[in-house]
Image (tube, rainbow, N blue to C red; front, side, top):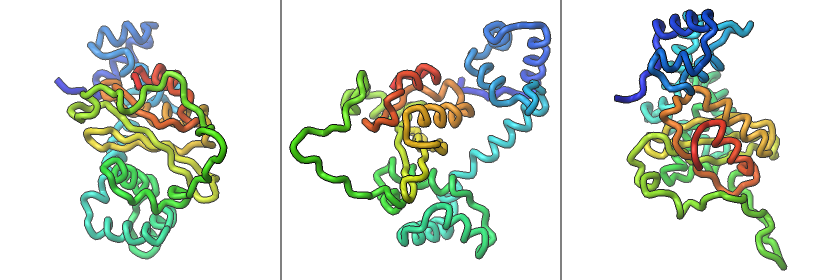
Length: 253
């Protein structure tokens, strides 16, 4: 049986058990759920005052569910897709495209939606990401020495991934990348699920490992634990903290 999201009855039960001072392990066992599911529910669905309210939690869930459908709008609307592709090839940023769509066409498409579409295209071998500013910046050749960027200790190379990941027969295997904005003043963490092409992105404060981990953990709060199996990174230093990241997300790179 596939994963099922918590419903309002389960959320009411969680509140009752919390009032009885039961911990997350006990709540999970009584509901027949994974402990991680309960942990994510309590971390992302509390009110601004830190209280857990079942009906408010349900509204939060409904809002995220509706928002999660938005990234696929470009796949479903050919005219919109052609418009975005045309502007990208003129080196417009997703923010510029979204703003012009809203102003001239009265169409609301967020920059995040456009970034997600570009990252899914990249995962499938597409080249649209090259039109993002700074994405195709030439690297200076390093003379007189080997690559100085360094290797991340204990990182498994892509060619050593298990076949189950390469075959894309299951949900839960992610590929991670970083998008650098104009002037290297903005950064986005991008994670594409290999089978479904579902894309998760999050804004980073800078290109440090600490920022990457914080942004990724924040973004993956909404993803069920059953859909977090592995994550493949490149050798960028922003992924140097991958051990801590996979531990917090209970996955293996």
